[in-house]
Image (cartoon, rainbow, N blue to C red; front, side):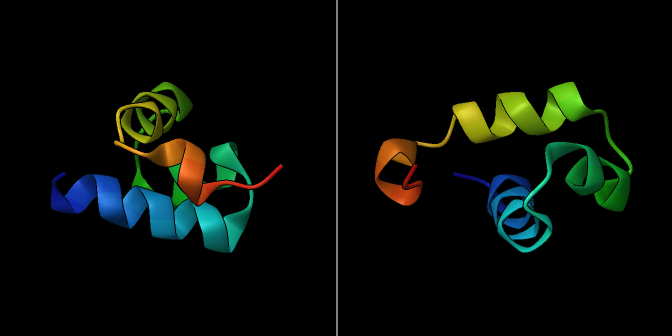
Length: 48
């Protein structure tokens, strides 16, 4: 896992919104979604 994925994940937890996270990091919402989807064990990190 690289630094960007960790940063995106932390920002997503703080913002609770993919669009806001993307704006905060100056990337597209698709980039955030793809990076979060590629995190190993992401199912353990999120509770629905």
